[in-house]
Length: 231
Image (cartoon, rainbow, N blue to C red):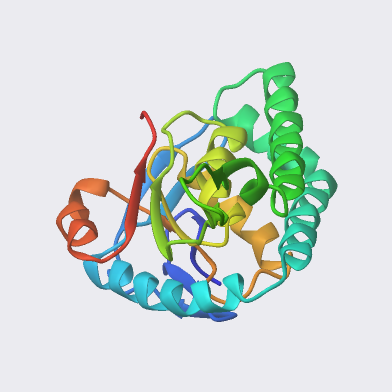
């Protein structure tokens, strides 16, 4: 698993790769001011993106070779981790300016979303596959395959649920994911702690933060599927 480590205040900026913390290649940060604290968020560079793509290509092999049952159990594990840390997520959303009731609803919805997709892991092909009509005495059946590495943009809405919904659709069907966040980066990098404790294979889910305009040309140059959510 590879992701930048969020930090409070000034200081060195790190990212996490294959279970180890290493210094961010850019060494730069951008600020997100909350009610109580100021966060210095790692600013992803073009090299960070290239490293994430390399990691994600290997992660696709690791993730896609798992049984659907195993992938489902890992997602259930993630929902349990978030449930156990619900109070810290609620506090973080409140620091972003959300009311306590809205924060609780968002976290509960995020947990429900993960559970829903966990249940979909071994059912999605039944929903999308087809027995196609043919003019002959044989069967023609559509079989779905994961396409590989995907790049997703998180919504700038301050919401764990919206972040989860930008990650899980390609992950559920067996793709590896590189997710990029800007205004929602503090939530994303908080989530990375629970991802790290949920038994995801190395490289299967990569969380990056920064300014998308800094890497947009490089994203288009990589052979990855690109998903954009309304920001």
